[in-house]
Image 1 (cartoon, rainbow, N blue to C red):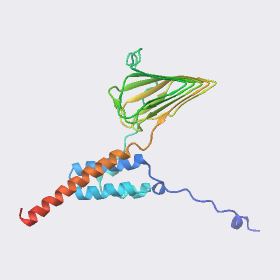
Image 2 (cartoon, one colour; image 1 turned 60 degrees about the vertical axis):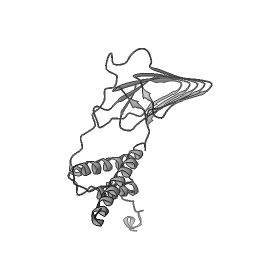
Image 3 (cartoon, one colour; image 1 turned 90 degrees about the vertical axis):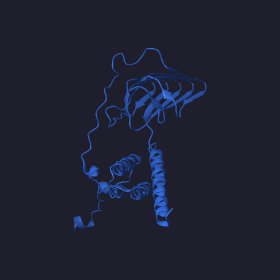
Image 4 (cartoon, helix red, strand yellow; image 1 turned 180 degrees about the horizontal axis):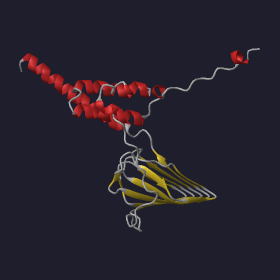
Length: 238
């Protein structure tokens, strides 16, 4: 009996180009196209057409096709710079700039708000959500001090910042998804505190960069329309 012939076939691993594209992948390609437009390598019409294709692309290979003829796409990207595990001594005040409290209730900070250097969150038989994905960062280092007692504290950050965890749990869950930003000047969010028979969780909020791409598409389409209008007026002699 030929065991090799009857052995089940193993599916080969997909190539990197066949992997599904993420929002971060689309944003990276959109940035390259924006730079190419500013350098004069692409016309407004070409830029608008390619960015529309970026939004519709499903795989990494489809995205790469839109920048294959651009020099910036072939430059080696710098490795992420690891942020320190603790804030710089003296950078964070002892008193909080903001208190978010939920006692047998729920409290939320989200949207376009200005994040202070120190934010305290208390969830006692309650739920606290601190969403920094659209926040304004005036400081390079931000500490979120979270205390959860039979409660839940969720912290969300944009995916282009660094994220560090310094706390722990007592019969509870304290979980922070470590994140390193590519930009060494990007804000660093430190999540500290305790989860006592409760839950503290911090992680990046994916997908917020899509809005930036959509804004760029609209601006590119506006520029393209103005260019068409100028051409039409020139052709008609106006």
